[in-house]
Amino acid sequence: FIEYDEMPLFDVRPLQPEIQLYEVRLDSATPVQSMVKYIKVSNVFRAVDSNQQYISFIADNALRVEVSDQGGVTIRINKIVVEVATIFFNEAISFVPCFKYADSEDVILFASPNIHYLVDEGGQFCNDYYGMKHNLMEFIDSDEVFVDLNDEHVFTRRKLHEMLTESKTVLYFPDFLLQCSSREQLINLLDMAIYVRNVSFFVLVLFYLRRSSVSLSYRDKDKDS
Image (cartoon, rainbow, N blue to C red; front, side, top):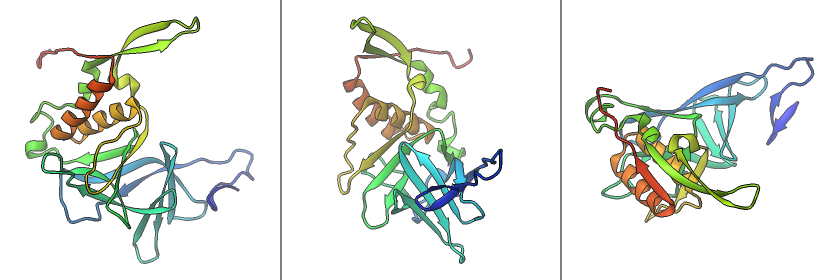
């Protein structure tokens, strides 16, 4: 077997071992309700010969889900117990879905194409209410600078949605200050804010991103075009 953290993931005895991926749904453990009804994680591995152990690798972190015989669910990130929560960061930014450490109030924001936030599309959270369609990232361009093979600085313009990766951001209680170590984190969080249609969170991340970018430009598009 190929194991990770004593969890058998692959049986390599067959000539062509089967690799099966699953989807896991995680519901909020807090009574706070928001437009995000639940979180679904895709491309999840299941332990061999077990329907109770699942693991996914996101941004160099191991997200492990275990189901007890009584039906309870335990979620761990790198062996640390967490729970799905909807957090009020402050009066301006609230209803942000995240993972919260079970023994503290610190929270984790994961941004990944394998994490899907199922959003209620009714009322003010309708796609057209704020005009925050998810393809908004396609209309923000960023001027990037890099060093080519000739050791010369070269500028190029790229769309933000072409720069999306995976990231993990930890916000610490009680201030929940947004402290990102890279622009990639900010770009991923901006995409997440649009995805869950959180305007105030979007404005905050965009403010940080503008300060750390060479230049951001925005392209207009008629609604009917």
